[in-house]
Image (spheres, rainbow, N blue to C red):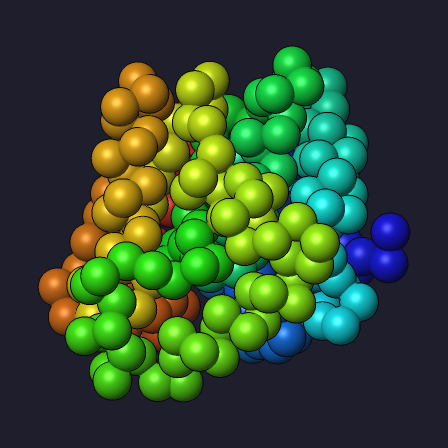
Length: 237
């Protein structure tokens, strides 16, 4: 697969597993903030953390990435995992959702829950509210992210559900926790995702922080602690 997988185990026998896919628009590698978040979540939940680093552009393509992640989630969600939760931020969150949708389509055993931070779930970036948010979302730009999305999509195109899972079916998904800041370029799509999930009778919680930026739970933002608590709750409830 060409993926890198890292495990962080709590000192005691783990209560479950959480799988985290970092963001970075498919061009940036995992950061220290990601590692700090995963360690904190593992320590507070007592879960074993599995960090999944997928190939970056120009090597990664959506069709193969989704298929690879389906296999990886299935392997991690084995009999030893009393409870298994999939998490991710930004591009990693979108890929997590796409893979879980594909697992539901195939009739595979699903994670117990999904928790997505500042999810990038519509790579077309066509929501009418997004241009007004662009100025305050540096370094994210609509043109730059759309270009990354086009390369990632490859022959599937940006509107394919494996690329933009907001356009896919929500039916049968596990409970969904969404965390986003209203100043984030991607927040309008997180809000649309919450609505689509609710319409499909998926239990969904949208935690929004007013005027908070992209990926604020991974920073020292004043609302980060509440967001981190919501991610812990997604694991243990």
